[in-house]
Image 1 (cartoon, rainbow, N blue to C red):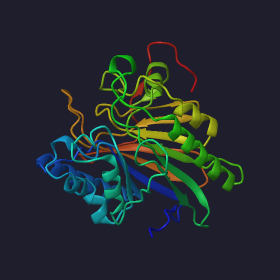
Image 2 (spheres, one colour; image 1 turned 30 degrees about the horizontal axis):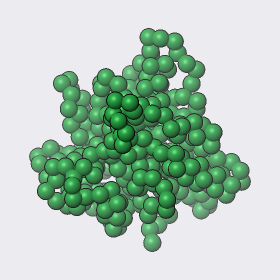
Image 3 (cartoon, rainbow, N blue to C red; image 1 turned 45 degrees about the vertical axis):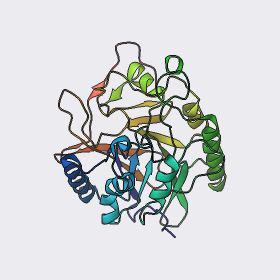
Length: 317
């Protein structure tokens, strides 16, 4: 039985997000990446590590299971709790399914993922709670499978998949339950998934954001199934965290929710320099807010990212 995650005695809880590590066959870049991940974890001393998808570049893996073990070996060896959601590259190999990968992560001693709920689309949908020093549930973390590639005609609905309506219903059910247990007050919560929502393009185009969009756009689905609206209605999620677009690390706020990219942990595949690293998130017990910053491979910590103001009108956040 895994221990309950809990806020520290100073009422903080720190998360390190690794994005798009895409482990495969143990090349030199993976060796450097593991050393970087260890340095970041030693410096930040997090309470939880989250992999936001594309843990593997599975199509090229000789041994998918061993590649996954390598990807999560640093927090495992350091005895740090961790959890993962899956991205579009995780289950591209012909000999591996998302179900097998999820079962594999559940075998690890320090993995805090949970078995899947029944009759819900995707693999790796679960919620984890964080207790305060009085052993009361003080925050929750939602993990959702944003899928891989569009099951429909690409020309009509884009290339990438989306969070399905039954997943949204599962989220609202969990949110209602936790809110009721908290005396009718929504718990301060965060959500983690791989593919960005359509609203990520909206915040860049119409609000003031902080950080960089080195990719030409946010390559999420073209269809909007209403997950963002559900989070606004439930009133619990303060921030969402995604990966997928290796050249994006910005965040912006819409209707009280901060939509955040991680910082790619693997080479960004860009022509211009873009150091790899991680995003760090710090919660405080009893507060409906969080701090977040970037920790780069050269040791640089970026607390204030550059401001981006859109050319068009600015929508009030």
